[in-house]
Length: 397
Figure (cartoon, rainbow, N blue to C red):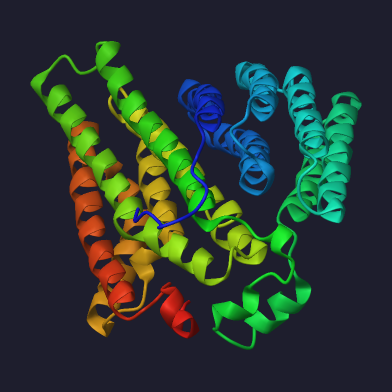
């Protein structure tokens, strides 16, 4: 990711909080690996969304109001405690025993609400809006422990919708303007307190992508540690899995990350754009990395279930869609090739009937490298033609 000349940098205490989320990510992957079926995928997605918006709450807090001073370090460290408990509570929550998980997320939101009060920075109306939303969300998570399934998850959804709207408040007039023009200047927030620091926000999401890429490596490596790759073919498949993970890194960080940053800069740190590109736009691609991590871990086992093939290929397809650069503007032939490759990516799992899991991992690696090469070309085209460049904001996507 190209570094901006100025902007708030990610703090050490934020990285510590991310370390706690690493535990949560690993537990979510285990939910799928331990019980490899579609029901587990949907459960993991629901828990992931709840944790995702908890993490975004911390990212937005530091972006707008944070400073690397002892008082605010203590607030982040305090918030890491319920997040850590929620991570450990993922396994029981995945089978319906969600009391500890829900109460932990409620406690994390109380910390976030308190932080917006204690910092005393920013416009009063902004802080009051977020505090009210966080306390309301904490109340709904708490009440949900007495509500039976599936209605408790409906309460979680209402809580997350309310807090997400408050954190990244959308200027309705700007949204309407976006429908009439491609000029990103129109999205610049009129209130400076609402604006986000583009460099910090992009860097935070890049760090979260790294966490999830790390889980891809961990799941592949765990198969070796457990003795599932004792043969030459197994070790070769492990090498292929590492190449695949590297291709996933390249797909995001070579072009997509920089373009996302440039677009957010061009919009003046618009909450509308930050919500569309990062908070919402990155959610499914990041979950797709979890799917691929679980799929690779299963593929490297001795007798993987057929769903392992599906997790890897569908996860890659969602990830390619999420980077957006893969389907960026370009010449017609290149664009048509990328569309066909994307369609074929979702269908790769059908090879499970004719291909061993170890060979399939090599196919995934080659496929990922090829897609990364095409995405690099598309990204270069966008940069050469000013897409996401503040100086050429009228051509931004």
